[in-house]
Image (cartoon, rainbow, N blue to C red; front, side, top):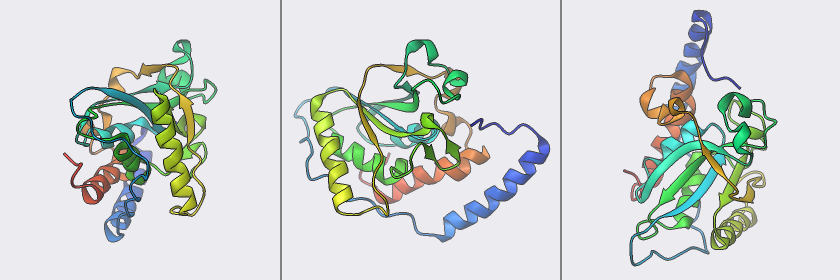
Length: 224
């Protein structure tokens, strides 16, 4: 789904919707943080770098969330699940490439655990019960997925999904896919840090800024 606003008339309509939704967001309590993973890594004794790729709707919001998480070194918007030949925005938007809009999260395991990252991902970054969609965006390119780089990451993610489903913390079952990370391709430059560069974009105001605010409210110890 194209997220650009192309006409003045459309802008007026969207801004009216924005005003309504922002009022609604400010008058409702933010969702509660999920329980911590029962299975998790312990903090490493020395600094380093580990990588995991996550997908859950438009990559603008996912990137914005993880850029505000302590211990995350970089968060890069891109594509995962398809091939290098189809890893461009226009082609991925067709929904036929196998790619999902994704974010490569590089983190320091001496400052944050994978379980903490997954807790943020499932709590505030997206809704893991929505199948092949997220908010206003529809298609397999917006699916919920985790692309792990180690078997330990797979084990922790599997255990956490099972834990959340058994505890019925959501009204529906989690549909997040778990896949081995066979390749990540950075998105075009204009997509990087989009939410930070365009805070007044109606799409960002309605869909992504609240995620960052929920991160600040629910995880003050992780927020930066």
